[in-house]
Length: 205
Image (cartoon, rainbow, N blue to C red; front, side, top):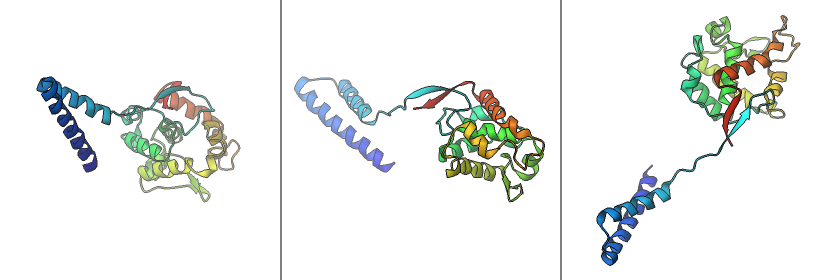
């Protein structure tokens, strides 16, 4: 921050010097000199906007897409133990290069939107299954951190689509799925993403 202000100071000083010199030669007003100084400063520090494009949601949606969404948007739909966790989902998704809409949708589907027994009593909002049983976390935040890192890992890198994740994360016919509910996972996650944003998702290119 100190370096930025130093650069601003140098830019302002240089502009002021030029404005003062031009004032002597052309007899321009002091107001015009300050306008010139402000214009030069804007040119130096003008922010660069990232280009945006739209993607249609499907089973082939890339889980690493940088979707544009605010934490407040997620909080509008969260309930139970997920309530108020929008900022946590957003920060962990960005940190691990995972689409926040996708991360949030999995949690909503796996935890009955924060109201399942595993969510309430084990802080397990992602249906995490370890060492032959559903894992217990110390907090919901810890579970979100674990899931984001898991989805960003090498195991999902070969096919980073929603359908690709489903084959590993929640495979149909898995031994720990005696009731056969895993077959609903793909459409369930897609439906939650549509609820959170819609079929057309804005991402940074």
